[in-house]
Length: 415
Image (tube, rainbow, N blue to C red; front, side, top):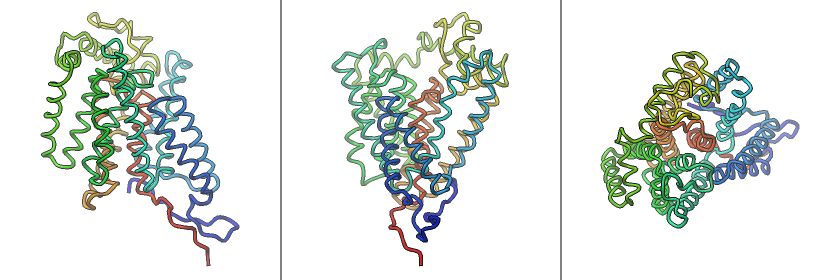
């Protein structure tokens, strides 16, 4: 098992009652779940509101844990995340400017989403989290389509971004929601209507962001879902891409073609950033230059053929981690990816013989999210984006949360 098994009941001291642990405070349990769902839903619209809901849900869960004295189970991939956090702190301590490097490490607290999701989104509740993700993600996609079609956010200098601050963040979230929607479509025959209705808006929203990395990630994630369900479905993907290409406006068509044009300025700059990152790693192999320091050192390592004079990051997740935090931290991140993929695959294989199950859909969707993150992350530092990271951690944790009992049985009196 990937997550430690937790008994569904416990003895409340002094009461003589044997009750499901979550029912030790049923009102608090329901409130914590509501806050968690609000966190998942609002991250498509406001990081401030979403993180406020997340903080409140963490407080609620902490109170529950303190009252029941039951520590939440965590999947095996949580421990590499802990190692990644420790290595990041070491990198910040050895940074050329520790004060500036420690400041962005507050994002490490987002890793608490993993035990929180296991604790709160257990059993059938995991399906409710998927419902919220699909619904609010679909609404966010409609906002982007309206921005493109009505408000004329239809060129590289003005791209749809929903209600979020940046089109890259927006496209990354839409990419993950597409993986969720396709996961429901191909693995949940009885729940196809709603994701089917949302798919046109999601695909259009992703297309009009002009974000090539998210296009690649979505294709890889969806392709993996098709491969897991039936390898013959993979033939559908190039047909869909060809239709989008044929029906897309000229601006989108040119953007698609630019992916294969080595003369494209952004492609040239990506190559220059790769060379710059390698040079930084060569000089700072163990702990990197420190979190938040790439922008500061970029000018002195900048290649002569680079397009931009300065870049805040290197648009490549493993390259960014190695240059910023060192090869030790990169090793912990790779450990996390390997353990996560291994555990999800084991869970998927375990459920594959059980027919159509919600857990099977969750495991397949999580694997697609990992594939999308990795492929898009070769061209964008999505693992460092708070909104993207929050939804990603929720999606990859849900399959393990669904293994826990959701405490639907009524309390029983001890004899």
